[in-house]
Length: 282
Image (cartoon, rainbow, N blue to C red; front, side, top):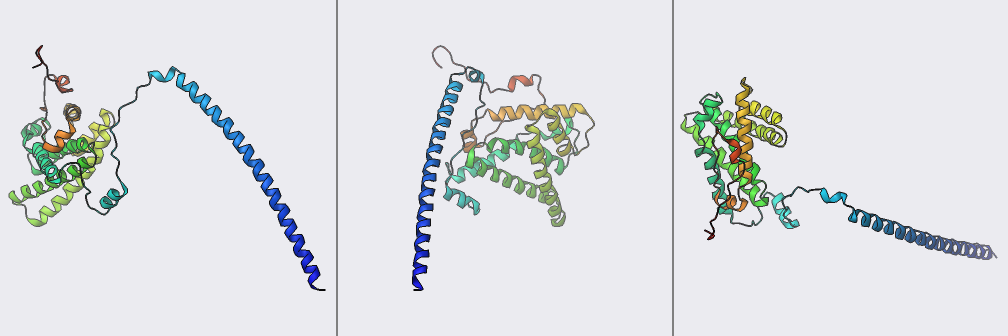
């Protein structure tokens, strides 16, 4: 007798659950129908909107700035580089290293440092030489960072060549190990601070670039605005000239030519002169 009330209660619970499930199913079907209808309406409205925008003449006058194509990097390559290794590159690594050394050599041997010391009123010291050299190294880094993974790999060895050269020069000058270590530490801090300042300046107006040059190149000791104007013009024209050089040639050769510090007609060198041909095609 005690089982019948339990059976009746169980049957009632089953029937209630079934009725609830049916109601939920009906509600779900009704909701899905409404959602699909709304989706069709929104889709049709989006198509109509895009069709209207497509035939609109307002967007025809917009000119997009060409961007450098980004190289697609796989997950395995990202993992290798995150561990501190270098994944396979487009060109031979040793060729890029040699090109990096040659590019740094162009920053050292093809610059008239005496002219910089004279025009900018800088003392003839190792630190002044380093400040002028790091400015040209930075311009090379800015250009090579645009060449994808190969360019970034080359940037590492340009900086590596610079620090090796600075250490060798300090040894030749007879600086002892303790003072040399302190000087290298101070130069490292100066270099990375200058990188951030110059990057901000080249992306901003001439006032910001002049402030970066005043802090990093002149050590906050320049009272002549003409010197700042000269260096701002020099950086701008050099960057425009380097931007026009072929990236593949820079990766394989590392050859960089620098414009003179003082020119009579600086505007004439903003664009690389294209070759001219005669009627015979020669």
